[in-house]
Length: 252
Image (tube, rainbow, N blue to C red; front, side):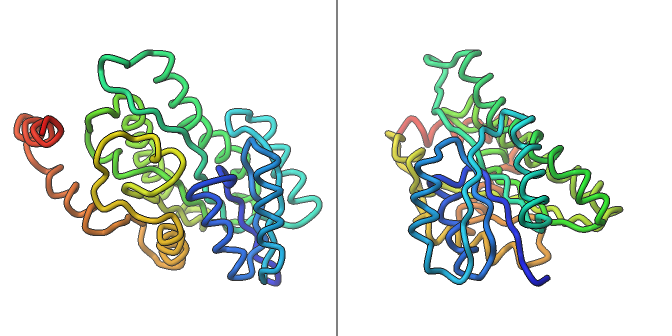
């Protein structure tokens, strides 16, 4: 490749912005997508002296037509996208007293349908070229049900399942698929949490883990490792014991 082109959604803040910057440091041309044009332009300006470049392409992942338009513009004016990090998402803690179908629908639309829109936008070119790399950002919250996560958790569980299915389907077309499952990362979304966040990780460290993991053959990129392993061990418990254990830790 004479030019490595990556597409990062949810690139205006948090993990998306930090990962876009990390890729630009390694010489990638990064197509940065988010709803906020101002934040994307600021990010591009901040990274102006890096070996790579960040190019803002604003858009809402819930708008399928816009996602297709972005891919079409990039292919016409820049080149084919080699790597897509589908990171755009939203999070609202929702314990039962504040749970609503409207909040559930919003998180499904952004976190899940948004990724589906991006996959559809990328599909035809990657299949035709028999090459591509898609990384879907889910969460350790998708492993099993967690408190205050009646909406967010199910969307991330669905993304893990989707990534697994996509990885199988992608084999026939030489499309590499990975799932990224972060734990608690210090971002504007987690800053709103009013509860303890074990093994809280800085966003720059998370971005480094992602970029390092993308170069590996692993299907799952998860961090911090100790938190991921702990949740997986707890997750194999029978439902009744799991619910009692997790419930008691929250009530303390």
